[in-house]
Length: 107
Image 1 (cartoon, helix red, strand yellow):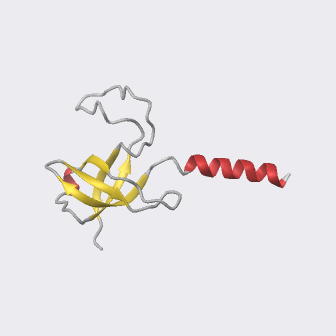
Image 2: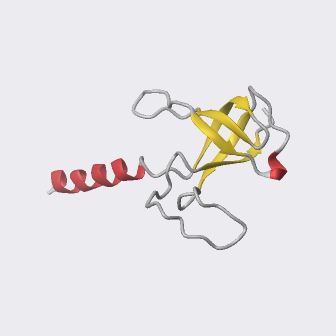
């Protein structure tokens, strides 16, 4: 019976590990309203690759290369973001490519 429970515990943990909610990241490049960042959490012992063109919220500025920032990952895809209600169009949920810089750590 314990093996059955362990299977489900491990299965749930594997799924949760792929749901992105928030992470600290290092800013590599900064553009006018976006930045390229490298998440600091490792995944399966490996470093993440860069996340490109992450939007920077107004209140999070200024952001500079080398800063450690807090990135939130949205519930749905941001591809069609506008000032009006919009259809996300894509089925991405809590995807690492839908990050938004919400602040800069003071460390």
